[in-house]
Length: 367
Ligand SMILES: NC(=O)c1ccc[n+]([C@@H]2O[C@H](COP(=O)([O-])OP(=O)(O)OC[C@H]3O[C@@H](n4cnc5c(N)ncnc54)[C@H](O)[C@@H]3O)[C@@H](O)[C@H]2O)c1
Image (tube, rainbow, N blue to C red; front, side, top):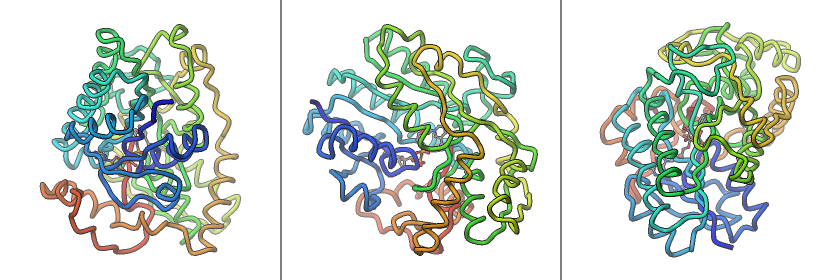
């Protein structure tokens, strides 16, 4: 069997996807690659971890050749909030980076490539309730623009080169293992960490903000299910709508209060409210359900219970945020993203940022 390469393996989704793939195909078959060196212990312990920079195509080609890679999961990206702080970086990584991966995949005749799009492809012009599979795509964020461009590029490579490239429009992903990386739906993860740690949270979008979401186990299951689907049954390739649940922040806070009765949520909307207000509230993912059998397992109640159980256990053990994920709080990260030297800080050999405090709003973030 040819190897499987996960690019962006240190990220919120890539880290759990890598472990799921290793469980399925064996540790030796799955390579983890990222721009950032300090991979989580569970990733390092279970298999090979390496450096890749998708903006430098030779770093991708070297791994593909050396390890006979047949499948790539390309999870590396700059997410929505960080992308608004540094649109040039978002375009460079999300569009030029994807082009480089597509070209390496074409030249090396890869069997299959996975690249995630996002609900951010929809803009203010699209219906916000039950957003259809086929509708107007006029995003107002640079992140959304890069995702629409990416979908068009992937579909082009499928049609013109026969490259089996597959993608879904993920909603906001909620998880208890790796912190989110700078997206507009990060509040739906932060709220759980803060409920466990401080019993209070100040949310950066309004209480009545409703966005489509999905719990990580469903996200991983959907991704693997989609990659297993037979090509003959598919009518779309890089752009399937996908969702699991939609709820307001207020509803989420109420659900958390069932387990943490003295939990309090305050609201101080910032620029991310403007992004959230242009995104769908609910999504129609009937094409994914009909064409490759997608069906979510977790509703709000089941997800909340499991998130709080996992995070409470970690908190008791003093492991709420793993060491490798310790980083600066979100706004400092955003400020750093605006700094043109920020990308250099990620270069191999660069000094790691000073750990400041453990905070779930730190590190990565976004969708
Ligand atoms: N997490 C969500 O809620 C969500 C929602 C919709 C879509 N998505 C999409 O799913 C994918 C994964 O998202 P995520 O939440 O895991 O993101 P993340 O920010 O948590 O992780 C992205 C990873 O990419 C790496 N990276 C950044 N620039 C790179 C480069 N030049 N070369 C190599 N690696 C680089 C980062 O170090 C990071 O580990 C992205 O395409 C994202 O747009 C995520």
